Length: 199
Image 1 (cartoon, rainbow, N blue to C red):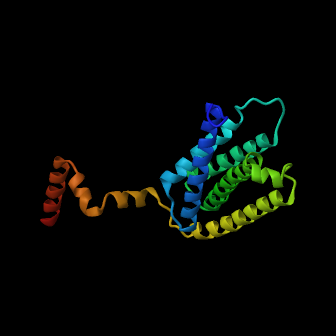
Image 2: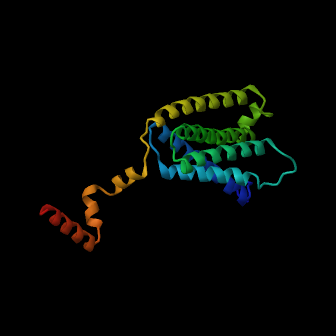
Image 3: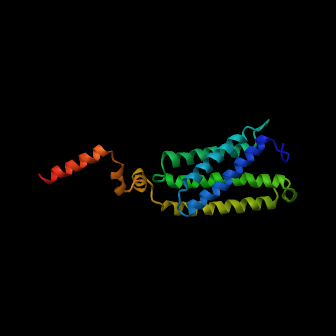
């Protein structure tokens, strides 16, 4: 055990922190109209792993953390659908932004709960988590995330959709495509062009 935590707990905490950090990077990308594909994959996968591992801790009754975990997995499923199946087409772009921000918020919500449980100074001012400091902290965080979700939906909506055609143009400029053609095909193209010119 390290710091009173088992190896499994440490893995769960690390996954959660990775999800939160990468989530903030992704949200920053949404606010600046950037896709950040690598960070998005890391955020979604680590957040899914965090929610799943949360159900593997021993328990004898249904807890509020399980409800948050179920809600998180539902939200993440919709986000994955919008991002990788629907490819942000049409209204799915807004759906992705909202669900991504909600998924990050739920991670932060649990983080705040754990901080008030584990940090002595915070636990002293809100021992039952029904006290004003805890409630105010959650209200402020929720308000910030609502504002961020609205702003991100507006900004990310203006990002041009990156289609397969766009990706090909970016990776294979027109002047370089000829260089990729097999020699025989290039010769045929030249022969056809010469024949057409004499018709």
